[in-house]
Image (tube, rainbow, N blue to C red):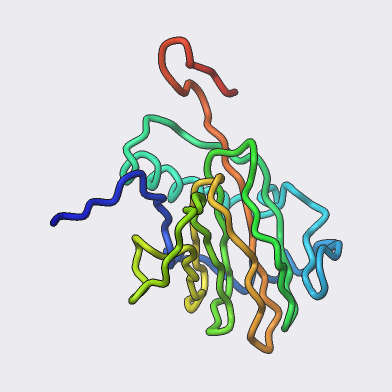
Amino acid sequence: MNIEPIFPQAIIGQEKLNLNNEEIIKIISNEEFSSIEENVYVSKNYQIFKKLNYLKEHILLKSTEYIREKLNYDVYLQESSSWVVKTLPTGRTNASHNHGNCFLSGVFYPKGNEGFSITFFKNVFETWRPKPLINNLFNCEKITLKILEDNTLILFPSSLYHRIDPNLSKDIRFSIAFNLIPKGEIGENDSKIYYK
């Protein structure tokens, strides 16, 4: 019997950008932060790309490739918001979340480490959940991606639930999160809309 995935969620993991991560860390570490959980802080600046225009351009380029060449959508994207998350060793958030009013979201990790990860959750929870013999893409409820490489970019649909995993390293984990929205015309017929 053939098994085909229907309505899969597409993400890009472990995409490495060729950037000076030390320069990025120097810029973002000087931001003002507010605590959101124990040992987890978020920048007060929700437009961090204004200070990192070259990173924004790289991310918009990769996002366009993802949307137009992989998913085959006729749409271009623009930034909606961007911010820094600083997670100290042992810091984590328990709550999974998604990003409303956005089309595509992502996170950029300037430094990789065996102790860094992000977890994504299945959006549809079945009423029957037998124990899997072996976890695979068809029966799992969550997927954890390790952030092993410096300059790692992960893109995902904004509706996909995810969580800031514990920082299991001895280093401060910096990440730059962002949301993207359509630019220009999107949709068809009576559902067409134009974003400036």
